[in-house]
Amino acid sequence: MIDRKIFFDRVRATPFKGRLGEAQVAGMDAILDEWERRALPDPRWLAYMLATTFHETARTMQPIREYGRGRGRRYGRPDPDTGQTYYGRGFVQLTWKGNYRTMGKLLGIDLVADPERALDLAHATAILFEGMIGGHFTGRKLADYIDGERADLVNARRIINGRDRAPLVAGYAQAFLDAITAATE
Image 1 (cartoon, one colour):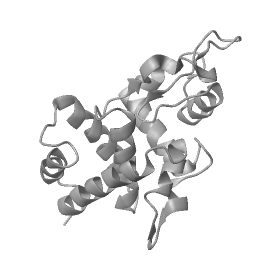
Image 2 (cartoon, rainbow, N blue to C red; image 1 turned 90 degrees about the horizontal axis):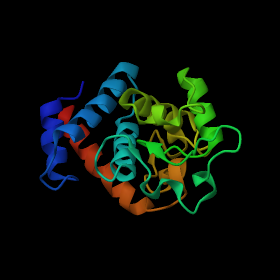
Image 3 (tube, rainbow, N blue to C red; image 1 turned 180 degrees about the vertical axis):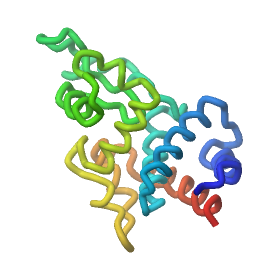
Image 4 (cartoon, rainbow, N blue to C red; image 1 turned 90 degrees about the vertical axis):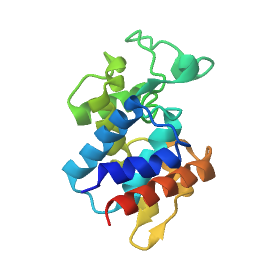
């Protein structure tokens, strides 16, 4: 179990630079609750999921819509069959109709018909875990980069978005890991 007081005190300092709001705490609580429910063994996975959420939500730790809603990108155009636009939503900025279909099937909901459901806190949390653990976004998963003695926090970014801002996200992951370690000692 993670001592939430210690954890939040630590992350408030780094990476949140002294300011931590209720919505940020609620988002992290949802992720921590799911982590504890699943009883996963490697806290580095949790740290990397929190770092990804921190980065992809612009530090809000809440499911958000992609800024610009996919404007200028192929996934930002309405689908000819559904009329929906499959721009980034949630904790991980889920994009593309196929990814909405895959995640919807895994969660037992129709995200293709209603992509806005990816913004629900419980759904965004499940998408984060299923996608990063199962490799459902890019074919790469947490165990490909973080397993046993190996922890390639830079290349783990490939799970979500190539190497976009990879060193930055790796730094966030280390800050979250430091907080997790302090809160579980």
